Length: 170
Picture 1 (cartoon, helix red, strand yellow):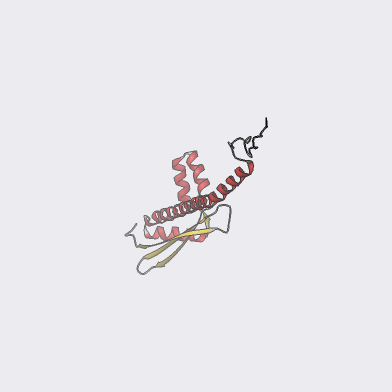
Picture 2 (cartoon, rainbow, N blue to C red; picture 1 turned 90 degrees about the vertical axis):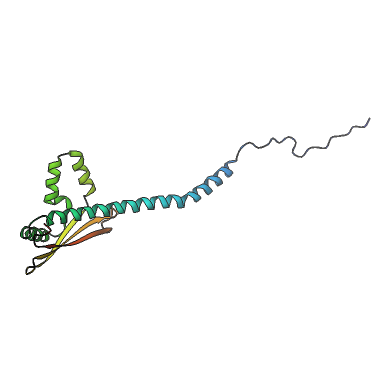
């Protein structure tokens, strides 16, 4: 009797793969990370932009509040107060007497702490021009703030100019 051998199967004893090798896993994670980088950058830049807009809006509100407080005064008192504020030069917002008086009325430690944190790098500066003959007073207030709180060079400002006609808009 003649014995015949069965031909050897080339891959007969190899099981089917059921997972990924470490190299395949690393390549996949790297591709995923590289694809996510632009999305992460986009998210952080939008957050930074929203933060900057918030700072600009706070500075605008502060400037409007200062102007409102001046416009409600009679002409002569308004002129004297603006000249006194102008003489102070650039001053921290939290040093403003009107704002301090408001904070004293509120008398809430949490609100005072939030104000001190939010406005610690805000400054204001007043200027005015007077037309004595027509009793017209041009009030200028500029509020400065840091776009990036850690960087002193990232200073931006909001300027508000209004006219006071005698005692009419007071």
